[in-house]
Image 1 (cartoon, rainbow, N blue to C red):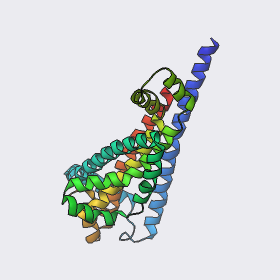
Image 2: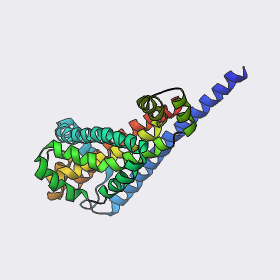
Image 3: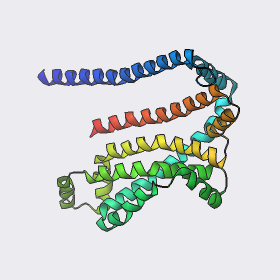
Length: 262
């Protein structure tokens, strides 16, 4: 009876915490929208359109099909670059954590790669790969790679040495140790790195389109800016933020479930 009561108490506490975690961002969003609306009453619409105007544009773009025309050319390269970054970051994190020599050699270069701005990398990718979604996907992979690999390395390193030693005493191979011990235990950290990288992947896709050309949200943002369409600019920003936050929320749920299952 006591055990059942404890389980129910923990479940209620978890549900209460989950509702609180959802309520706080909603309240914050409502506050931001309220401040935005009040400011739009005193600032010319050319500089700051009201949230109601942006919402009306969002609805119109969705109903007329403009959203689908510009959305997927940005989302697909971003997801492709994110997948490429996940695979490369995970492989590098595994290699680096298994070899001290490689860690000393590789880590400075990984940090150095983040000092080069995207606008400098984009023209090089155009020279190497031409125009299209492929160089944009590579740019997304580059910009999202660093937070992923650093978080993954930290997560794998923090696995308890006692667990590793016991696994080795049981006769597991190095591959079995990585697949069945290190990666499952480090899964929350791995997913946290992916969560940080997914937002940057969307940024890379938009910047890539603005620099290298394209047919997605970056292009729509450029057209709106050139036409001095402030409502259009804000609408594109909302689309970008909405997609990034959706990916972020999905990975947050995955992290919570992974941590709960461990």
